[in-house]
Length: 581
Ligand code: 9MR
Ligand code: ZN
Image (tube, rainbow, N blue to C red; front, side):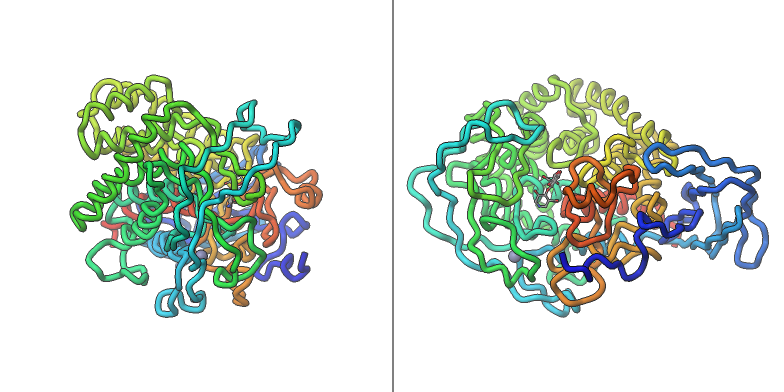
């Protein structure tokens, strides 16, 4: 590993003994009227003062409690309503200043959306991308991966989440289609692969953010389509949808992914000259694509009816294929294809989300009945990642279909959803820093757990008006922006102490000191680390199992489907501050 890569510029690795400030804040600040909490790690009396030195609030005998995830002692201080301005919290021999501003999260919301623009597999022009511009990438024609597979070794180890028997590989269909160009799509993460399921899920988060909180989603992001009369969040999501449409096979199924044979080195995307291949199709990718396209049909109709028609037609063809292939057959990589697997043991939740969206798009009984069937099986409903998309189906039922969805898809679903979303808040309450990640669940991409739970708490507060749920959700943006065991903002370009070395090829290869802005890191992980990371973090508590080091994909990669739930959360909170200007 390049030793230079290991040295953070702005901050020192807290796991290497640097004393962190005892007061942890949302480093971008707080909104005047919304609940606000800061974390303190030391016992004592604390005083909050305004800029003029006047005491605003006093907290005596604060006694931080043991926090299992971080090994710290932590207390959360609730600051209540504060007028815009600069404030200082002092106590236990330390002080820290922060801002209360009318629209504290407006810029970061825009940045998180624009973060997806920087992932475009396309030329990024200087006028939009500034110093992060680059020429077009991955422009060659692509073909299906059709290499004959050698007999599989019997003792081939399978990932732990995988069903017991190795599923048969999906057969290609008839004659190989001619090589063709498939343009666009977002690079998935730190790698340049493009994966249908994760892309569709990302689109789902963005489109629901727009549907529920349009005024929080910003606009004029400085992307190529800006100013075309369509909100930029929709322009950005459409870039991916246009790619997803090209990923449909002639029989209606969707290819799982379009990637090179193996991950590229740490080079710029335009330097990645390896050929790309269309992987085998998968049921999960098809379900996700159907859902995102059916949702898109509704969202884009007022702007572009022809595009909406294309999306709906593709979604219906995909559904037809799914209906004819009702058995569960998890995707697996053909031997030799070594990029991301995104293997998902069950396709029931993808089928559920797809059925909900097609019912919402068409009103047809056949889709309603299918959605009801999947719903009756019992879905988790508060999950928003690529392995379980049932939360997206819940969004459709609770906020689009609403009462008209009937007893199963509304009344029963709502009851189950409200019950399950209590877990999100219980997790917050069990955490010293108010983080919605159970102490035992710091996994690869733990930020998704925090943001997914924030989405569930937001949905709860929208349904019930509960303030505790709102406060829990705000705490997750606070977590991402520094109120955490690392005193670190996980969003590139934002915060006093921000990550500088995400596992992101362009950020490492472009020769520019600051990483591409608006990207959120996967965050602490102590479960399936690389051996060298494990070694370096031996004995470190879960919430601190993080390295701001380029090579640590297991703790510090970025991914489109981690940005997008953060967009949902930030857009909601941003929308609550619109009236405060
Ligand atoms: O998000 C995925 C995470 O849940 C897995 O634990 C991890 C290891 O298999 O892979 C993650 O997905 C990666 C994908 O396979 C390839 N592109 C980068 C993704 C983010 O790390
Ligand atoms: Zn590319």
